[in-house]
Length: 96
Image (cartoon, rainbow, N blue to C red; front, side):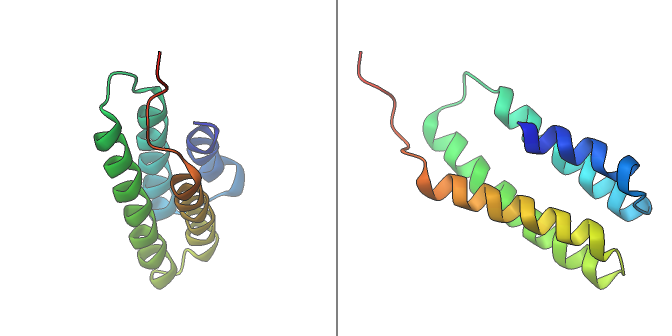
């Protein structure tokens, strides 16, 4: 969730162009929303994490191709973190 809040604030702090601003704000909102979702099934949460990481990679490539290299680099770092977090997460609920 912290990465999402950082993505929302980064375009203003780093002076991104319109493409970087929109991409980072949208990705940040999705990350925060996913972090706050409690009633989501584990399989749906795992799928959403994977799709979000893929979307971040696609946005990284699009931003880098359009010349917004700093915004693309930031999204690449967040995508790498999201993928790493997904890989080390145990996708099971604790037994009660």
